[in-house]
Length: 109
Image (cartoon, rainbow, N blue to C red; front, side, top):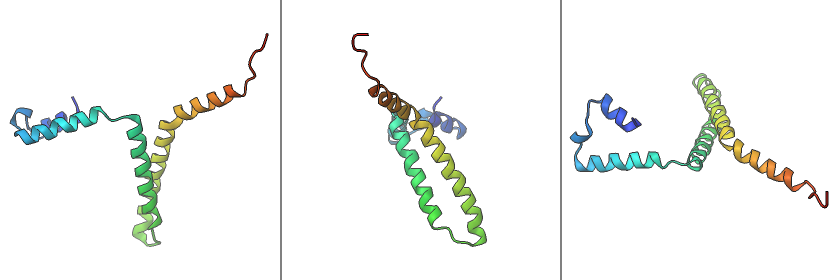
């Protein structure tokens, strides 16, 4: 069950009850979800990280902003960790390729 099916079920709506425009929108959204790539996810994480960083730059020293500052820093840390998790395989592959470039060929051994 995808997210949209779950939402319809929670709202007590059946797919058959949707009008043609709603069905088309529903089908497109389901298609979009199925076609999300790792690259799309990486870019989204980067965009969200940048958004939080911009919000942090607007923080002042008021009492309300102290709590907001803590929450934004926690979100930023989560995005940084997610980005590191998603880019780790690429970095590991690059490091392996770089290390293999430094190995001298086995000539006549």
